[in-house]
Image 1 (cartoon, one colour):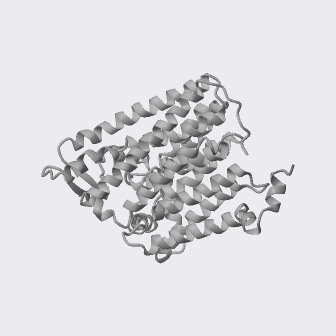
Image 2 (cartoon, rainbow, N blue to C red):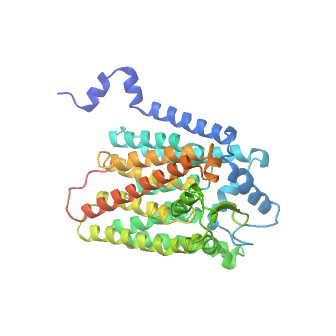
Image 3 (tube, one colour):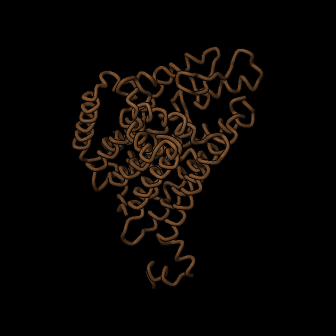
Length: 419
């Protein structure tokens, strides 16, 4: 009987090529090149935040006028300014191109670690192909926001969680100080890892160091401004809770409107109960996170294997942040990449359902944004329906992850070797 290596060697040349690194890297460049082109040329200004907002912030700091997060409160954690400033390295005229090259380079680092240098395993090949398909389905928003900088940090952190938890803690902490959401992955690692105290200690020490540098630079309380800025947001139209008001507009309501906030540059719901719903998102998020954390702790205390706990836990926590969120921006879908990649590396068959759900969510997001976003702004029924389906799929994703965590705490399966 021939082993897998002999079978691969006897396969047709094209099939062998598709199973190797050459095809993966070729498609990696094709996907990133295509997304970069769309960001620069597609209708709907997919790179609008980068060229219209990030660039202005970077130039203000370079000219010595205002340093976001230091001289004034800011919507992002302090490290988010680092890539925004770095993209100015070749001048304002090349800011967009530099940003896209930076995202591609960071993704390439994560991709190279994912596929490794030893013999390419089936699980890692599946995870790599899925990530490329996911990026293509999601479209230009996959590269056109600060979230795109955090994704490779999140993927690297989760891939290193089993063998190098200290490095994982550093990567995920840096990600959290770029955009808050990787803190959910860090929390999942603290719960699932045996060396949780060490992981938590590293994250705490690094956070203190980052805060210390920002305070030394003169930030003061502005270093925590992103907490207050997020709390002050209204109910954005892409937020899951906003669907109830969007359907009221579809039904002809004269009391519900979509308005543009000049303060935070977003479209929000204006109507009876919208402010109360926005205020409710924070306690809803806290309750949801607590419930998922308790499921994770239960599984760990019952002896569930690390590989059975971390992937669904790392998936459930960001999905809770997405569902119980007053913002709901399309770039939030990028958060799904890291936990799904990890799950496919560990157990591709087990993670097939969330992989398909996440891919579908990416596709629906791409249909809505950026090309036809204007239809959502006028509450077109078809696009409100697409947004509703997207939210339903997110709920299904959360239900799957919660069920997987519950099952992990109900039985003891032998842990597979992470390849």
